[in-house]
Image (cartoon, rainbow, N blue to C red; front, side, top):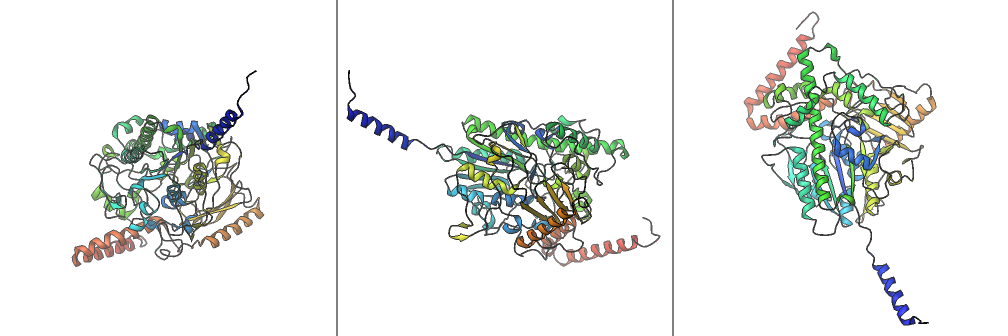
Length: 596
């Protein structure tokens, strides 16, 4: 019998051993973060909407929907936490600059921009060998040191303010003197054929394509302007929704509530409040109903158009063979927008000179639309409240994550999750070590969230311990989450400024106040919130604070007064006369017996 040569066997074993050592590591995933602007909880098809969002719904089928995900109630505080994993009061964005009281600005945690005590997800991924790109809305600073190119992004084309027109390079409100667009840290201009969602995806595809020659993975952050005001969309998409909203906002809210139960997003039998700010649809005449329905048609068209553009990005990744190695995160930065700028005197005057609100122009170039509080209540269904306030309708938004290795797809997680959980999730998925409170030899704010990978992979049902207290505050409205319970306080006109207690697992609509049934939990969670506020430097709001009034003051200080100064003394004198006349008129109108 032939025997194998011992030298041959040794050589063969050494060869296999070398091959094993040299085997390539598993390729790290690309990461795409898709941030919708002002989408309500049920504005996505897979969360109960009638709006066509097939591409986002595909991500939902291939991934996990998080039914109990929470953000901040306005855009830049959420974005600051999404990119740093640090509470907004510690990362510099304790409030948006546009709604921040003057006495708060510059205090610790109230810079209005990302401070230097935090490290962004982009910086950590770039340091570990990722390409890092951002297109679209930034809203975390617009000075040279606060733009994305100095916060870890290799390439960027961003809108630095809270929003801008979707068809033209112009501001959407007198909060700004121009639309602040920047490319790689330098002032930039938009093409003539610009539409926001299309342009944001175009740039993202361009950036991804230019680096496709190397083996490095990429991180792409797309900050859409849809559906921030002004609500605008292509006419052919808007017209698809003619007649869909003819029954009004209350009917839509009920339909979406039922659909959320059917999908399993909220418990069977979960109740829903009738929001006081919702008008009576039946009290409107036919013309008013047509106009209001058209506003929601435009809104639906804007959402569908964004979904179509996401589909174009997905198609590109499939064509280049990158789709199967890409992790997707989709979320909205806060709940639905209730503000109608035409209800704010300073904005209304400016809008009358700069936009049209004619029904035939809604959604188009030069047309300005919003959905207002009644439709916003439907977009937030089955929840209570909306943007700017701490009700679930302001804080709970859709979250979808797909593309994670080992994910249990087409599943709904009801675990409480928070926007600060995204950074540790993506770092773990990318195989990147989270910092321990130090970065490049400097002490920085530590991450406070927890990775969602165990939930995504079916290894755990929970993210946070039922004893963990997670606090929240923005513009005076506040909340404290602990297990299944939520302590919440909303300012007027949405709330009464008092604390209330809800079990948001069984009662996500915040219908049954439990403070008298559970007095020990009620007082204990108030103590937890006091600890949160103290540790994070939460400042009390001035008496009579109102975000709308604060926005008007911001516009006067940053736009109106500089323009009047540039125009000279006659313009300033005219402003004094105008303000004086307005004050006199209000006093006259408030006198007893005066009817106007």
